[in-house]
Length: 189
Image 1 (cartoon, rainbow, N blue to C red):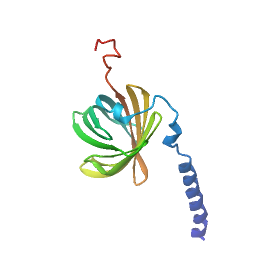
Image 2: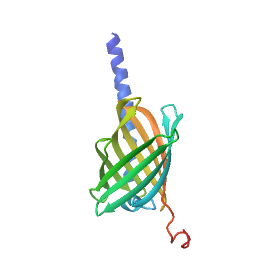
Image 3: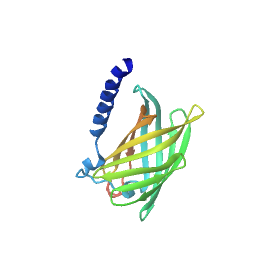
Image 4: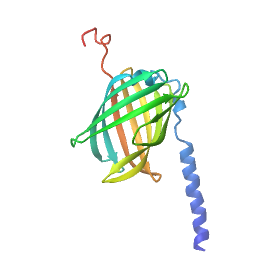
């Protein structure tokens, strides 16, 4: 009798999970938002970023800065990221991007398992990939679900949810800023 009673509850939990996942936002929901994000334009040249990593309870456990330099040729780009963490450690990641069509991008990096996939609509990018993270000497393959939003021509915010075995393990929040161009500052900078 115990198994028969548990079965309807399992179906109820499964149905609730499917309902919640079906209500998730789609990047195409942002198709009309401005300013329009062009990855090749935003990640061309130097970009500075600041971020935090929060564990699953919301506690900030790491702070970092990133210096980036990007370059694009036609539909292919390279983004070099140099991370400096508050504890003094450093890390380097080099992304290689390819624009597949008007909305779709793919990417690879040495610590990315397989290929990252992204979609751009309006001011938003959804970027999904599996990152091989060193956690206390062990490699964890963690699923990243990045949502990036262009706020103005020089500023973008990124919010990433991290999961392992389908369970949320943390979140990364990152702010990107491009330097002012000489035209933006009246030729002073």
